[in-house]
Length: 114
Length: 111
Image 1 (cartoon, rainbow over the protein chains, first blue to last red):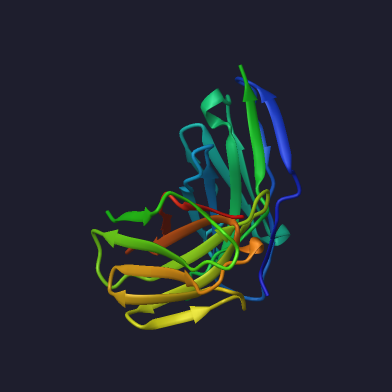
Image 2 (image 1 turned 90 degrees about the vertical axis):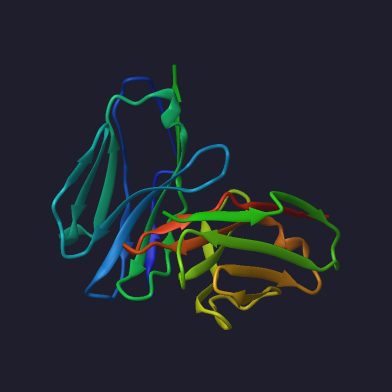
């Protein structure tokens, strides 16, 4: 069975601070995908990133960066110089390599104060 | 790129009433389609997925059913709603590069 744990329920920061969201996963699959999604107050899930299990290279996209460490089964997400528009619920998810059925973590609510 | 439509956007239904939520996809053909539910204050749970017309797999035994009458149409139904069916229902589509994109969702309140 697959399991995704996001231990941080809520994080509150002041604008321009960095914030790191933790994600730890469990799977018996040798190949799999990892994802991060953003859910703003409107409710729609916004795709942020997909990572293959065999690609441990870290990735940076603008103010977003992701650190994948297979040895610790973690896929952490950092927002650098946070902005009020970053306020949302962020979900980490895991899927099999062939079925693409997503197992989600419980989500982390990020509040960025001006 | 594909566009996912869901309707209605919000719905308030009494316990015991039927339900029909619709999801349609534009800009792709023969996509994998998914229904997820997000209960209040909780994460998302996969309910059903479909790899083609008439092909439905159920992930969680429950009061709901799904159908795929056309290639780009995915319907979530119930004959008799329960209070526990309340939640935010999201339809998702697998893109050609195997990334799941979500529709705007339907917020269902069962009273």
